[in-house]
Length: 269
Ligand SMILES: [Mg+2]
Image (tube, rainbow, N blue to C red; front, side, top):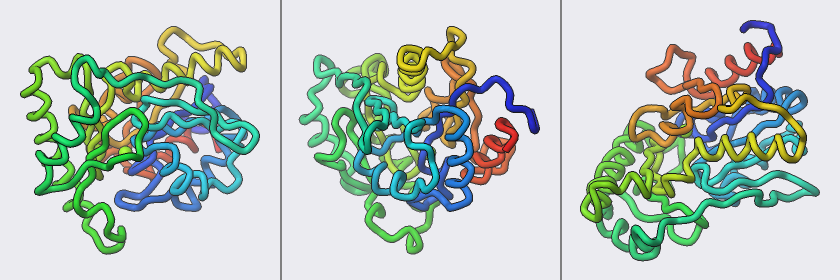
């Protein structure tokens, strides 16, 4: 793989812990430099639990030198996709919350109560998914221990899954619950990150005339939470794209350092 510019025609990367150092809310200059180079070669997309406004603040603001015409965003853990044109992100798909399974508003209130010892629901930010954050969310990242945040996030994930199982043991047919290590995303089962990669691939076929194999193997997918219950589980399960993990259970290097290595190796930078 080293030095070859291979068959990868596009790249999708997670945000937190994948292009950022663990526990830090924005990418490093070294990471941005690599992304800038890749974006000169192929279309790129960030696939993150964050909503559009959060990506603008913590991501785009830092994307100096990145070719914005090649930048896409699959936000809310893959539930909604945007392309960038004339200085703004425009929506190109949106999945829907399964109201027939459980009303979103009601679930938010219910989850807020269930997890109150460990965190709270992030109201009025996301369009489709429901996000549960830890009580440490508003602390400066220098002042909080990422392990402590991850432990709270894991606890919230467990409680959220238990609560959904009370509605139906088959809840995963309707909703996926993903632990990002800094919070938990509950989103439509058919609008997870794998769906985001698929929509991205179809968008590139439609809008740019690009060609892909049926499972979009030419799209490189990089994330840090592929484990069962992790918010990259469906992203990196191999259904669509070619997955790479930079999580601690992978061979390493981990997190943004691992992502830089993969991109440098895959694109001969
Ligand atoms: Mg992540």
